Image (cartoon, rainbow, N blue to C red; front, side, top):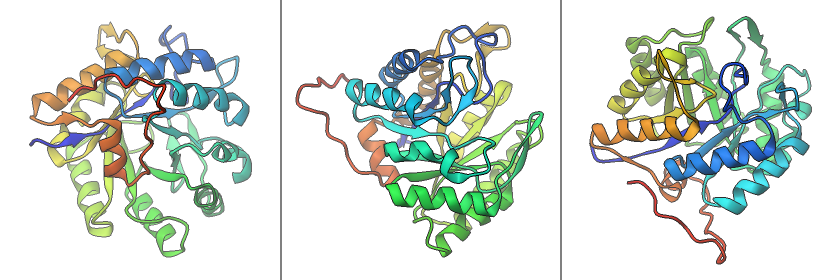
Length: 289
């Protein structure tokens, strides 16, 4: 099974707070430092949620701009993906940070129960965000919480608002959405391959389901996402030290099945993203794999 596996790191997520883990990076400087460490541990992609000074989710370009600038200075090859999650009814507000032109952005192609809340994504919201991503040259990662969302994402291709090959993030174990059951992952992957044969995909298990879903994804040929935004623990009784700690664990899973950790250049090639050569002044450190 020798193949490159992309490890994405969700450094913060939308809900995790300092009270859940003291190492959750909230400020721009904390986020830059955490991303750099995760990159050196093997992450080729980072998933960003901007937080305000009180730790609440926000979609502020002003909050994300220094993070993106700092990351591109320290590790210019890493794939930067921002979140467009939120509750504002205007896609121009929720997608305001797309003007910063990150490599990718998450897009939820439907509404879903999410813990104790509702992620409200109307057809108008989905189309509005997809249009902004197309305008700014940002590749969407479709965050898929149920089977219907695969069809909604494919519908955006038919309407000219998304381009193939698509990239999907399949999420399991979130209360109110899909439980972490292997046959559900198998069904989702089979349907995805039928709808979009060239699509790439990642599967994520939240909380205690992290490692189980990780192994299922590796077996089925998918990629991985980890990070304090998805789980704060290495085991039921042990907190992860930081995001890099979780990335190293994911890298170990890759090696255990005979795969290897994709470099940022390999990840960009797999996802069809433009190559970003490091500036001459930046010394590239050796990568895992």
